Length: 539
Ligand SMILES: *[C@@H]1O[C@H](CO)[C@@H](O)[C@H](O)[C@H]1NC(C)=O
Ligand SMILES: *[C@@H]1O[C@H](CO)[C@@H](O)[C@H](O)[C@H]1NC(C)=O
Ligand SMILES: *[C@@H]1O[C@H](CO)[C@@H](O)[C@H](O)[C@H]1NC(C)=O
Ligand SMILES: *[C@@H]1O[C@H](CO)[C@@H](O)[C@H](O)[C@H]1NC(C)=O
Ligand SMILES: *[C@@H]1O[C@H](CO)[C@@H](O)[C@H](O)[C@H]1NC(C)=O
Ligand SMILES: *[C@@H]1O[C@H](CO)[C@@H](O)[C@H](O)[C@H]1NC(C)=O
Ligand SMILES: *[C@@H]1O[C@H](CO)[C@@H](O)[C@H](O)[C@H]1NC(C)=O
Ligand SMILES: *[C@@H]1O[C@H](CO)[C@@H](O)[C@H](O)[C@H]1NC(C)=O
Ligand SMILES: *[C@@H]1O[C@H](CO)[C@@H](O)[C@H](O)[C@H]1NC(C)=O
Ligand SMILES: *[C@@H]1O[C@H](CO)[C@@H](O)[C@H](O)[C@H]1NC(C)=O
Ligand SMILES: *[C@@H]1O[C@H](CO)[C@@H](O)[C@H](O)[C@H]1NC(C)=O
Ligand SMILES: *[C@@H]1O[C@H](CO)[C@@H](O)[C@H](O)[C@H]1NC(C)=O
Image (cartoon, rainbow, N blue to C red; front, side, top):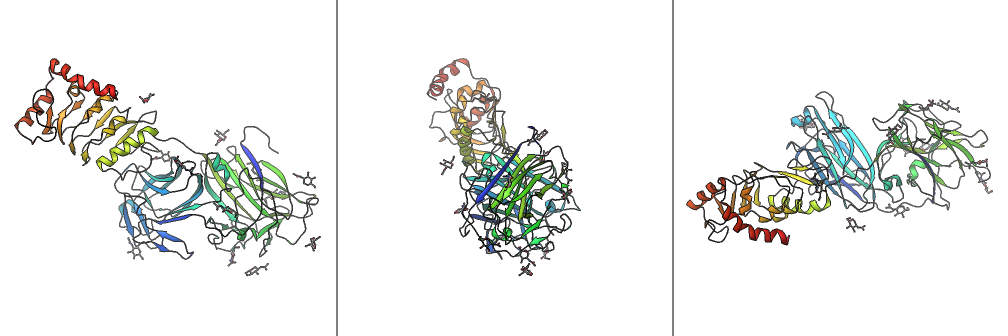
């Protein structure tokens, strides 16, 4: 048995009372790009992506059945596009996303080479890459916990080529006791999920309603697994038991438990380990379903293992077990599972199903919380609400730059066709060094509170329709520019006699613009500095 401390490992035995699983966990199924929702053959209701994302274009009529006959793609070229999925706090979810480019030749984005990353909150989940000849179709699953967050950001992060796309999003609440590694800050990426004991040639995938949590269970392919003896069609009954759920009892569905491989050695051959990731979580599902009496005194003894690590378990026919191993297998390029009965055991080993996941640490990086509300105010004021997800992570919005302390350092909105007024909340983004708002259609006044941004070096407001007074001190900064705003006037020289903003563009306006490019005389600046200082001190 492997004992080296360099390995992160854990083994747990979970016993649970099997009960009727007739409750309703929360499901959300989104047919991306679809014109209308629909109920599928499993009686699962699919909705359109309305309300989950505002960007992207729809492509419909692909050569696939609903819900894969439509997709959403993102030709806007944004650094990322994020779906915002409603979720419950402190809840474990399985998320399944699907990609079916199909015959989507009308969208060059889909037809030509494309690569993009998919992230959940800030966790890198997968990279989708297609060449002109090979356009992969399929789905991916991940399991994670929401902690305090009441929503999930599913982001498509633009790569080097083409436009990201997605066909389907399925969010499935899992039982609170399932996959409890996620409650310790892990993000699990599904690698394999097998229903052992079905006929190997049984092409039927087992999922909802047979699995109330709608995980997809595969029959074991003959290409990868030996044709082990099977028991099938057994009725699974329950008996009282105790839960010791360090890594969770994962609630394998009854249908998975009622057939199994049986034999003295049910080990897997070596198979390729999941790409890149070396920390694996394996859950073995074990329930004695043979018509035998297996007592505590005379149990079934089994050795379960992952690569060179293994350990022994004793099984009676009372309980069903989730036995899990989490281990870093970076020393090996292949994975193998050991399921062997102990020589003394009267009954041979049994395996009803198993799952394997890659384990990542959750990346908790996020934009500095106190910058989030002011930035939301900026979005609202400029009509930029369709930028969703975390402003800084996993990549920043195109019009935002963030500093090493996760604070907003730049607003990059030159020539962005934005209108609205400059919100005073902008001055709560304390680490701003640059504000680029030139060549837009902004109206209203320049908030004097901008002067409280001590790190601000560049403020470009040229060529807008701003009006009212320019706070005098602004003109002491060479990086602050205002030209091309006919309604702006300069405080202190008399051109701001009427109430700010009420002044129609006139010959005075050109004076104001001209003055902007001149240095203000020292006397005027000193006089004007008083109310501004007063303002600064009050803030
Ligand atoms: C894809 O195939 C379907 C069904 O064959 C057809 O109706 C549709 O027009 C095709 N779409 C494209 C973009 O070629
Ligand atoms: C959910 O999280 C939000 C944000 O942290 C928090 O305000 C709220 O109280 C939480 N609700 C529950 C039920 O934990
Ligand atoms: C996508 O993820 C890969 C790692 O899998 C990373 O090397 C790459 O930089 C990422 N690309 C983007 C655009 O984030
Ligand atoms: C978890 O399973 C138990 C037992 O079936 C059930 O009572 C509970 O509602 C389930 N919780 C969720 C969130 O599915
Ligand atoms: C395939 O296996 C599932 C699950 O064990 C079972 O319900 C189904 O009847 C099987 N189908 C065939 C064709 O044997
Ligand atoms: C299990 O049920 C399937 C479908 O009803 C049947 O074809 C098969 O022969 C049964 N197997 C056994 C061992 O009874
Ligand atoms: C169990 O089976 C595996 C794969 O078939 C084989 O490599 C291994 O040597 C066997 N172990 C024992 C103890 O028989
Ligand atoms: C298991 O034990 C019970 C009680 O001792 C007995 O009634 C039953 O027939 C036994 N079952 C088998 C399959 O041996
Ligand atoms: C399983 O993997 C371990 C580690 O790579 C290796 O030492 C062992 O030989 C493998 N077992 C089999 C049966 O191939
Ligand atoms: C399993 O049971 C056997 C026989 O009763 C016993 O010798 C052994 O220590 C037990 N092993 C474990 C891991 O409980
Ligand atoms: C796995 O082990 C390797 C080698 O010891 C180490 O570099 C790597 O960080 C470990 N991975 C995890 C996720 O612990
Ligand atoms: C951002 O501001 C904080 C104080 O709020 C400061 O500690 C941090 O160093 C600043 N970051 C940068 C990159 O200036």
